[in-house]
Length: 164
Image (cartoon, rainbow, N blue to C red; front, side, top):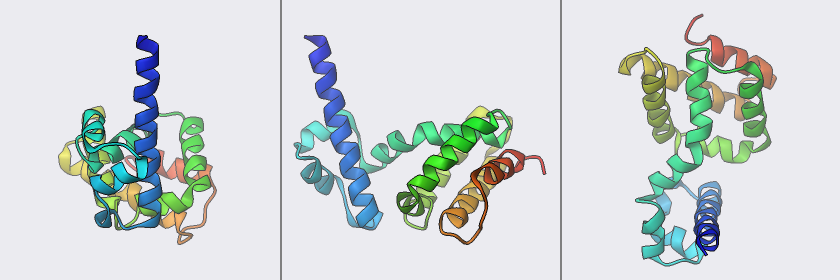
């Protein structure tokens, strides 16, 4: 019985995450809210709040694993293969990546990345904010075509960014 409940909870979270991705891809972040998420996911508002506290919380849940890899890159504590794999994922999903790292969501993502860099490294808050801003800026420029580079070259820059 517990396994059925766990699967049901996972299906609900997946529905919320898919709804978030769909809305974030097609609308400005400021132009949708929890009401839109619950309508798109076809769930009740109370069900949403059993899983997440806000739409920002959904964004954090979607991004934390990937931002963890980027924060490890800030200290050089990630393998080039793992980082390159993440960058290939970003490139394959660059339409969404342009939104996530662009003006709409970029500041929220940058703050979260800065927090993770500060938590996982010896950098202070100002250094972590600087590194996070640089990483997000590079990723956005790369995904929009402003900077042309292969994923392994971008990975090398991200890993070397803290120690030029």
